[in-house]
Length: 258
Image (cartoon, rainbow, N blue to C red):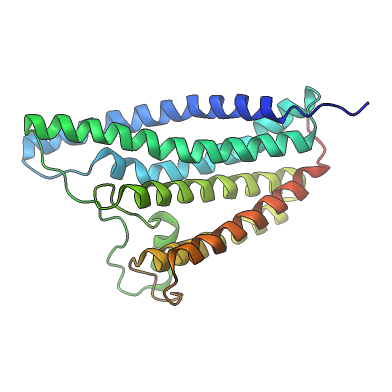
């Protein structure tokens, strides 16, 4: 008799576990943000909103839990009789849900924050400006910028695009962490390092696609012609599909290290 798929249970378990971690991450970043606000009130200086403050750290958080998806969840599920296919399907869908939940939660907190601050007239928020830095046309610095400073849309300028861009960024970082973790787990260190190099290339392409589609400042050494946003997102989804296919191949017959 065919074994019943259990990936819905995997989705639920992984989503809520990772969301619990996300609440811890968001709590820490919010405390740091409050400290910056207190300093801003005392100094009379402008500060970024919470949405702006959490934007870049969220990428790193998703990268880390993407790696944990292999070294923690894969071992746990397979050792408890869950198929690698069900693990992969559940983890992928849970990652999509988490990538949507993070910016939504951050935007809700920011909306409450803006309401309270404007009501009490405590501090002035500056508009988010995370898209570029003055790098003097240095190639290495520009590449580093594409990795650290992901394409960003200010929440107050366009709510939908801000949430969409945030979600695409963090989902990309989750897949990259998952791919790197799977590469090191299944193969040698050399293959894992190759996955890191591939991930850097993917981040650069993602950066260029979103900047082109959103008409944001680009990286001078590999800018692409301006594209309609839906075309840029479509190409990005194709890249996601390729990454997911690679992760599936890496984890399909992987020997779980107990």
